[in-house]
Image (cartoon, rainbow, N blue to C red; front, side, top):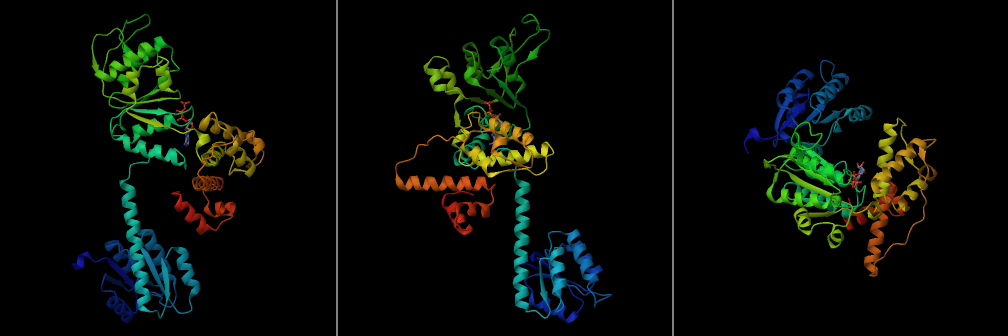
Length: 452
Ligand SMILES: Nc1ncnc2c1ncn2[C@@H]1O[C@H](COP(=O)(O)OP(=O)(O)OP(=O)(O)O)[C@@H](O)[C@H]1O
């Protein structure tokens, strides 16, 4: 390795003999030296050494530590990632601790063993390297488009991985899930993690608009196409050109429009109502519904050919009641969010409230939970939310259990761990206490069940 490639090590030491000794001992580094504060700062500015060893007693007042502490603070302001190892006098524990409190990486009392110092310097370099690598990776990462979606449930985590994987393609995604399960969040995530993210995300709810208006909303119209069409208006499909179009509640799309949408998906052109021109549109479609499209097809309510056009990738979003641990996890997060929004200070859920949340069936899913917590935050007298504030009944219906004993045991353990982690708001020590096991045992179990 050429000497330019060696990492820099700055030795700040006014005792020339000791300075030399350290230099010789660490020839695996490109050593720099300084014997007072000013020259040390000059070396830091010029070379930004990852690691610095520093005597606290520096001239002009080498018997006191004032120059040393001043330098330590300046180094950490100038280069906060630098690892500073402080060398102190023999019985100078108080100053050593003060240096650590200020942000020094480690300390050694003189006289010290040079091998021990060497090990600490090596460790400091490795830590510095890791931190730099971490920073580099973080700066390369795209913004996490699923960060607004909270879950620890394995099935929903799998859904998130699927969404991330399919986003880069242009495949049409069909999101199936009950109302309030997070279909819109996932549809936006598809858009935000695709190359279309700089373009528009346009959503339209097919159930909320009457049939005659829905056609013009989707396809647009020319001026004079019908009474009241005062000027040309592009439809949602056209508006979403180059971006993503979310067709929410696609199961409610009237038959006549199903045929028209199918034509668009085949030809990728739209014709505005009253227009003759075919306008090419490049759009990625994500659709969603809470309905069972397969049975709609059987009953003649939905075209099978349209279904297969839309269902290139089908994603099933599990309802909240089937997501292990998620009700409590989301409830804690919503309490924090709403308490902040309502300026209620730090609020928490009392254990009886968490239990009531876990026991409820959540027919309205995350939206219902969100509203329920919002109401409780407003209603609670103190800063603890009780089961009464939540206002839920706790009757729990029986659950289907697998018959294989080992599988049942694993499944039960897994659920209990997820529930404990959620109830403890992610705090492993608290969760271990709730479960009556040691922290390492809980870590082992989490590892065994693939829980982070
Ligand atoms: N996993 C989650 N983490 C955090 N917030 C969530 C999560 N899932 C849903 N939400 C919130 O719950 C509410 C409902 O979610 P969203 O609108 O995406 O559901 P939806 O399935 O599209 O509902 P609908 O079918 O009624 O339109 C939103 O406020 C959303 O931010």
